[in-house]
Length: 441
Image 1: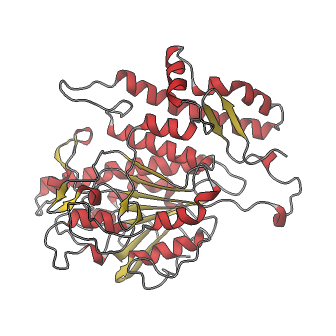
Image 2: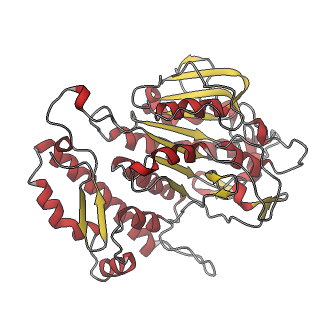
Image 3: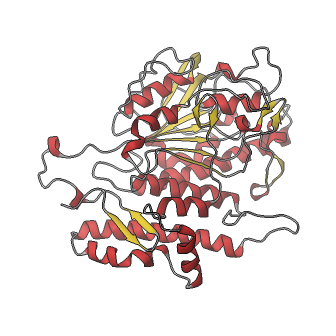
């Protein structure tokens, strides 16, 4: 048996591995086999949702999916739509405008944030960081915070609220938002850089100079390991390493070929194609889960209040502008197209996760993934009846393929308490929670 912590090592490079049969005990007795790790992910989208096109018509087993969710038909048996969940602490409560900032900062915390654009910001620990505190010591990275739109942690971004509120959903503590990484190259180097003090910049320079892959540096270790593996493990190892190589090549291609408008400085490695940017970051989250580099991740498709355009689906106006539709048919259709685009990227991520086989089920089967946001209808800025989708089976502990309708203003944090249970982290309260959500679990 080889160690589950086996690494492929090379010049400034360490490549962690997925779980192989050779890493498991020789005996097939269930009591001696290690329990499959469960992963947790939160994927955030801004500016509310086209709720009429999002919400299934009936409760119970999912039948025909509504228009915005239709890209998920292939994963229908492994998702559930949860209606009626709320983050009431994102409401003004006397603080005036600023719903976008409040909705993002409250989404994973469940607390009413302090209105400030200065250094005295205040929220609370987010659910992902509660999990990271308990499980982070088991992996190389306690958590992984990703995004596809840059945003600062200072300045005023929404009616007197700090930019930290609208550009971060993960909070280590009440005064500490965690900045997300939007540059795929930096994420890749973080995941596969050396942990032994070697200068990663020098490693990157050598790879660039000789046009080599990060896998070329670990080729000797990989060849040696293959000689110790059976046929199925060799196939699994090759598929995994091919996935690493594919991501590396995609990052490199964007760095070399992405056109940049005159006068605009594009950060190295950030794709111009927004859909590919989301998919690339999703693929790196998947690799981190697959190789047990982390079990906790968050990802913001865009910052809350984002006004980026979506020309790729025929929407040349800004997202935030279109979300304030006022029932205008053109704006309603534009918002529907944006929401459909986002869900199409989610479908890609879920499909990839479900294609990765693990000793028990697939990576998606062994994950709890929440997709949605902190605003219901972008025109009303409401924080009840939020768009929330739950994907994955949590290691076989979650019923899927359902549309669950909960009593109005049921705290979203009740779901988070139940998910923490799936991770083996019993927590009694979080934010405005009133208990653990049932009966989905």
